Length: 454
Image 1 (cartoon, rainbow, N blue to C red):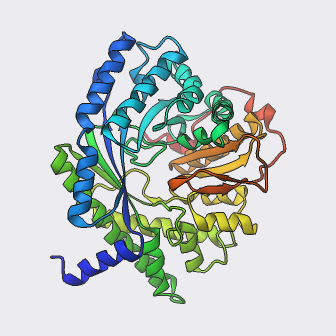
Image 2: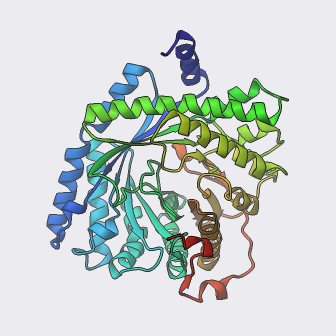
Image 3: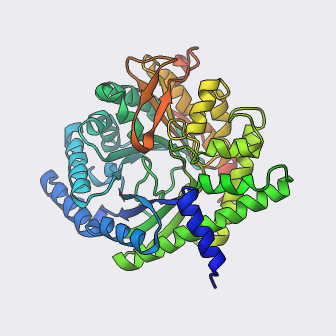
């Protein structure tokens, strides 16, 4: 039974420590929309999404009022469009028309973002998948709410270096297409290794082909809650520290479980997973970097940072798994730069570099996230950074991702403002030594030896 102390504790988490449900994301399968006629395909996509999600925002707001829990975003993820559009799309412009349909229906139902303008090419690319990837810059420049992701590697298949090379070029082109808004299009584009089918967070969400026709996935976030809990155990041993994080993660996940079940019941859509990811915002007191400092670091990036992040990630997952039988997605700690004031402060102080962030991605939930780099960074350099991050995911059997933003016209020492949850970021220096010959080899990096488990 829930007692009054637990009710009061949860209220304090919401009112004073920035606990929120970051997103309710409805996953929608578009496989039954496939048609060789592009006009009919777009009509079917619009109708399927609208009929499925027309009540999503209203239900989210109703639950928020009923329980007093802030639900920040309502989102949709769909089947990777490279699969859905393959029969109808004969050009990049055809795929862009689907992106515009997704954007139109997202606005109509009122969601913040719609994810799934995606391709899964970890072993090779079909003509349709390559066409979609090449259409991404145009698609992201002419839409507002569409998010795109490309999975270029996995532990089972290795890394598709042809796709890695192409993604470096696509990121550069997306930056150019959206240069008037500080290359904002790149903030809606993620490159993955081992992408999960049930991720509710943008920009990487898509509805995997293993999923049901429709599903409700909820993403919870509570860096401020964890930070406040750790303030009460300053100077205590690692055992006490770990227990505190674990218990806090349990409580936060229970809130997500409640919201997920309520949304599922009210919408008549099956409950999928709760993703407990400590996803920060630019607001003061809502920072993963501040948790690392509370653990004992002067700044994120100081010696000991990777160990502290590993501890945090592990205890968050242990607490979450105890709170719900269906924990999934990316669950753990995110380390985006622009969306975390503590990370921004660490970069400005010189404590945090791109190389240290890469080391931290070995133990965190995702990877190099929302990092602004000079606009003149070469496409091959971007591909090299992607390849490094994909290798970490492939070898360690975990999800890794890259969301780099080469801001056209800006360089190291300048700052770029994205606004809202995306925050702002100092432009970080990039290693200028060439990897051209490596990236241009083409082909695949084979799967590691430990992938052979059948």
